[in-house]
Image (tube, rainbow, N blue to C red; front, side, top):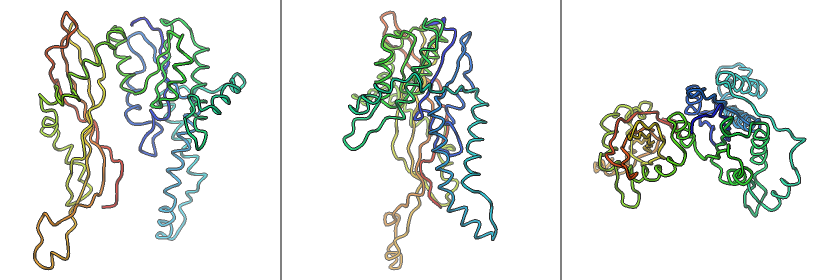
Length: 364
């Protein structure tokens, strides 16, 4: 798979979306872009369709405006105006976006409206064909159509030879992927992906000079070896990964209760992510598997009626959920590939703590 001179990477809004209102793109994407400007002799160019920038600006501004009532309350408390108007918020959001674009060297791809086949898009909209959503209530998908068409225009402007240029589009939306796969079915230098992990595997394969065919055959085998959902078995169970995480990263797990005195962490589910190819050295293949551990931060509420009668016990307290979220870990593991292509000798190399992410945070 080696030999590409440049790779153009496009991301949809659902890939870069950040839970934190002050960020244009997620922390994971931000870090990855900074670290991957080049692979060996391959130039990487990261693109954002202008419609994606506009959408993120809209989302960030709405998040800022949602804080306005609290600002008004603070102004009343202080007795003077802080002069934080909607216009000021919009200017600051635009400034934040521009700074991120410059820092990461992102390229903004504009849509040439004069070359768009509007008749086809209208027909697709009316008939609810991809990228438009199948809905009886209302038309949905115009934004996706604009983003997808922007990518298609960049394909037309780019070299057609696979070794000269590889174009990658990442989106978590199945309808937009279906549309782009239909439109690029004859293009040998286009890849339509659904997750950042798929992109990581692709770029690592290019760097390791491993073919896509090799990965396509090995990936499902590796997934089953790490965890077999049908048999509820695999490396994850055999090496007791959850126990390893609990032992090695107990402080990180406990830290979610720091802002809530008297609270405790309660397990709320475990999710095993996709396998991300890291490298191949000889017959040894290394993967990264994400494991997210859901949690509730809770505190016990005393049952006052029983407390007065002196009957209170721990079983009579009801937990109040103060916060929810996930703790993210990266499990690095390896195996060997036998002469017959089978996976043998799998083992865990290390487990890395990534971050604690709060989906909802109530006042303590």
